[in-house]
Image (cartoon, rainbow, N blue to C red):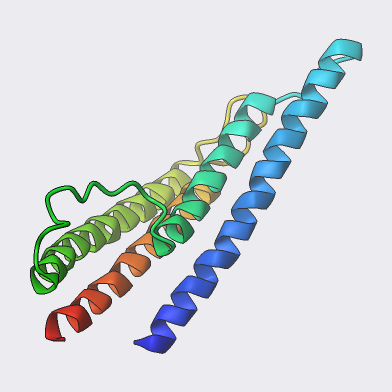
Length: 160
């Protein structure tokens, strides 16, 4: 379990770095587009590329956020519970969440494969949609793996 946790957390950190690069690229694209719009012609497809980069930014950052417990958690009801009962509740929530995200990954992958076969592309730049859908699905898979690691940690806390 320790090596699984290390691998998942390191990979989620690396994906978070890629997410940051996508965010900087998105900001640079918008900045250059605004400058070019003022002096010459804007970059064709900026709206589409911004959407693609935004999907990459969010999808690849969410697993790292979950690994660092960065999401909002309302614990007003569980703060005063015994540790073992809290561990059981964490276990149930983590199992349900990881199952949900594994199903979302599966559906995202099916959708990306469908988009690949139909050949659907963005209207302005004719950029295919399926690579970005695969990236979103991969980010969801990483989130599911982080939550699966939380399942293991909850089991350890329940046994103690």
